[in-house]
Amino acid sequence: MHTTSGTSLPVRPVAPAAFAPVPPTGHTITPAITHPATLTGTPADFPPGLESVAPADEDSAWLHDALLGPHSADVVGYLRLARHCGAPVLDLGSGAGRLAVPLARQGFSVEAVDRDPACLERLRTWGARIGPQVSRLLVTTRAELADLRLRRTYRLALLAGTMVSAVAPGARPGLLREIAAHLEPGGALALDYTAHRMRDLAREPRRAYAFQVPRFDGVEEWAAARQVFDLDGMSEHITYHCVRTGRLSTERTVRSTRKWIVDPERLDAELRAAGLRVERRRRHRLDERTESVLLVCRADG
Image (cartoon, rainbow, N blue to C red; front, top):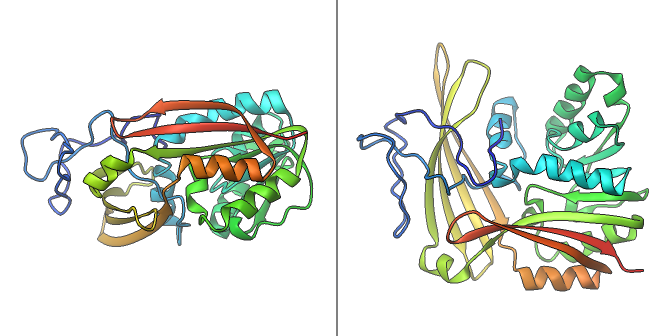
């Protein structure tokens, strides 16, 4: 269901004619075949994420699950980190449980925090379907990250899938302080984000993608995403135009999200101010303009 690191979603040979976004200047989207309506990503491209929008219904959840960007392959890495740090684990912006459920399946107690009740219900259903040995390790909490108030301490806190970009810059320092204050001695905060080359964003503030949404319910869904960066506001706005074709009908929907561009230097300063020391920094280049950055932080003292 999720993309692997640095790859595009699987795409069929021909996209619907309605989905023929024009590639931004200087950015090539390679046609799969010679057809004016066919667009597919090159191996280095990836669909922009939907971190700051919660699915409004079950159909929207398919798009939400597909749009974790290049971080879907991070599950194994976070499992490895949990084995090193121990439990309990705090999964912030958990969604439908792509990290929380595998962690519980490996025996870790997890508190999953998300603002969307539909996501948390899907998480609980997934855990219960596996069995009581998993569901008893899962606790769900509905909360906005910007207003987070924790009641216990944790060995590991996760802001995975670039969830930090869904938190407004003004609210981020408070969130980091709240997390730091609830880490056990020797505990860690792990987060990842997408780092952009600012001069490239200034030169190319608009991008477009077309891809197929992986679904397993008999519905075929295609999405065209138009991404606009605002460097003055350090934000990005993405609009998804989706076409879903079932056995009896075709439905068109539009969803949008606003995220924040992460300034690495500012984030580092906020982590230090919260009493968090960056212990490990790992970079993975996604294309010539962007890279994924993973930070593992420890509380000072």
